[in-house]
Amino acid sequence: MSFIEVRNLQKSFGPLEVLKDISFDVEKNDVLAIIGPSGSGKSTMLRSLIQLEQVGGGSILVDGDYLVNNGVYANPADSKRINGKMGMVFQQFNLFPHLTVKQNLELAPKLVKKEKAKEYSERAVELLEKVGLAAKQDELPSRLSGGQKQRVAIARALMMNPEILLFDEPTSALDPQLTKEVLHVMKNLAEEHMTMIVVTHEMEFASNVANRVIFMADGMIVESGSPDEVFNTPKQLRTKEFLNYEMNE
Ligand code: ADP
Ligand code: MG
Image (cartoon, rainbow, N blue to C red):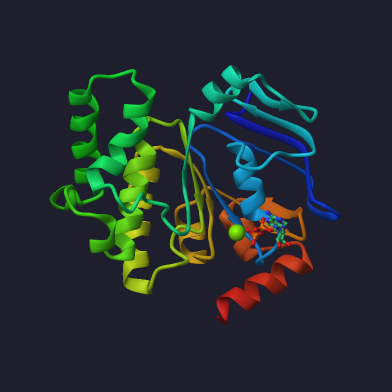
C-alpha cells in the first residue's frame, strides 16, 4: 500500500475538464515533483488532495483511508482526520497579516485545542529556528521579505506534524536569491525524509532533490519516472518540447 493512492481522478469546472483520469501513487519519504505548463491542472490536482477542490470522480486514498471512494467523499469526521495528515504551502504564502509570525504558527493548534499553549508555543519557536527565523517571531508578515514569508509558511505547515507536505509553486513569487533560501529549507526537509509533493518550475530542484517526477499537460499525466528518466531520456514529444522551453527560459 502506498501512502497516497490517486485513482482515475476527474474534475471539471462547468464544461471545462481540468483533470482527466489522473492516477498516481506517493510512497512515504517520496519527494514527488510535478511539472508542466500553466493551466494543465497541477494546482487543481494538489488542492483536490486536501479537499480545497471537490472532485467529480475517482478515488483518493491517504494512508489506507479513502478521502474519496469512486467520487463519494468520506464523512466529515473522517475527512478532517485524513486532511490533518497533510499540510500545504501556497505560492502567495497566505499568512494572516494581522498576526505576528509566531501567532501565525500557533493559530491552528490553538483552534484545535488538543495541547497546552506552552507546548505549541515551544514548537513554534523550534520550527522558526529550523527555518532560520526565530529572531522574527514577533514581527508582522508585512515586515518580512517574500522568502522569509514563505519560510514562515513552511514552518506553519509543519506545526500540526503533517505526514506529507504539499507545495504549490512555492518559489514562483520570489526572485532568484529568495528562491534559493526557500529551496534550501525544502531540501533540508527532504533530507529529513519528509514526504513531499512539489509543483514547481524549478527544474534543478526537481532533478536534484525529487526522487520522482510527473509531467502533466492538459489535465493528464503525460509522463512520469525518475528525474533521470524524465529529464534525460523523456519518451513523449510533449515532455521534450516542455523541457526545451523551460531550459531556454
Ligand atoms: P496549473 O496549476 O497547472 O496552472 P490549474 O489547476 O490552476 O492549472 O488550472 C487548470 C485549468 O482550470 C485552467 O484552465 C484554469 O483556468 C481552470 N480553473 C482553475 N480553477 C478554476 C476555477 N475555480 N473556476 C474555473 N476554472 C478554473
Ligand atoms: Mg497552478
